[in-house]
Length: 197
Image (cartoon, one colour):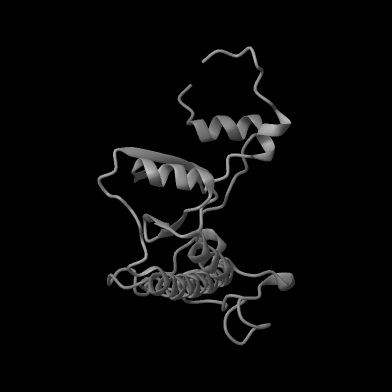
């Protein structure tokens, strides 16, 4: 039982007997004893890596595979090109929106009939949300009858004559909210007559 584990494994045939390596006498280990970088494969010495510059094109490895660094750089380049393209498209949309807003502002300047202190609110659906504008009783009747219209400009809803709203609609249909209550979806699913609110 005084045998070491290695001796026991050798006796059972589970380990191989390795001959001891002889160190050359009188030779010092290069660089490692002096604190320098060891020279060997993987630390800059030895064979050059495949896929380096001058081998099968940039970043190509064995069998034409792309190295991880080359794939990462290609991905970063694609993302940068995509981000630049998206930024340019957004800038073009913003410039177009500003141009349209400027033209609409010139059209409706001093033409708004809003009663900012009106005691009534006219609710309407615009871009999927219910919005409202303050009006007086006469404006509410005119909006419901279609003899007045609304124009959206920079976060505000202006009450304007319908002819002016048509000019704005010709320039940009998104700036004129529809006030009609006859929604085709309502006709498809009519409200029952016996429903009590």
